[in-house]
Length: 282
Image (cartoon, rainbow, N blue to C red; front, side, top):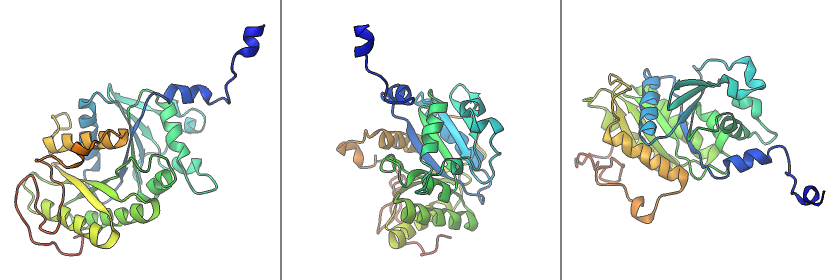
């Protein structure tokens, strides 16, 4: 009887879940949906392949404008709505689902916790949603300082304009000022590097934001192919940032990185120097 009395009682029903996740840090990857990108799904597949190379299981939470409506069971058992696409990738159709978790302050961050609890085996939570949805998810979240949103664009003006508008919203409303870019374009597109430079310049000049890195993805490639060195680097840095593992020695980009620098706009990958780009993002 004395043993039963002295045994500590859990603080609430979520105590067991907190103990379960206490030892594990999930990498949060907000990916800004862009309805003007023709092959956004291909870029997400390539991203998941790169995370799988690190042995990470990715849960893709698709709350974008074109995602499917969530199953009716989502209100009762979110885990029952998760589809396993491969040994390393799971998928949750979640259009409109984050707003069901909004609180009085306008934050939907509790949805992120619900998604992690529904998929305790995931190492990467890839949230594909509009910029406004991502603002509500991350603006008052403790993870806001460790996430780096991924912008999606291709080599058409409408998609680039949308990506810049998304960057502006995330910077001003959520305080997320460091971004990466996935640019869908043919391998030898003459516009891809110029687009990345223009976005970097506009981010710096008008928003006080940073486009830290960008990767070009050819939509014609097979998602099962090995990721490019550039994509591997971006994913590695995303993981380090999310897990807080970046050291001072790693803070500077590697020699092969295509991190965007000013004012000469020299890319480390090519060594070429370009004139300052136009102010417009297209």
